[in-house]
Length: 40
Image (cartoon, rainbow, N blue to C red):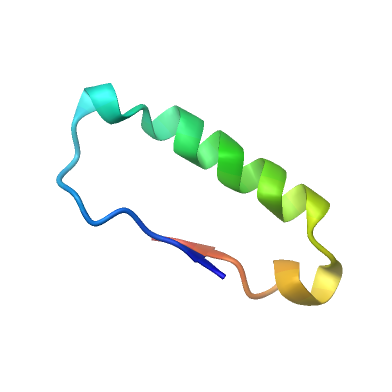
């Protein structure tokens, strides 16, 4: 699973929220899937 945003960086996009959501996703997925998660 890849988590990708194809946009230029803007402060209003709330990158902290994206990283937090990705962290939560990593914590609830099983180990085999978690090993393949990537944030770009």
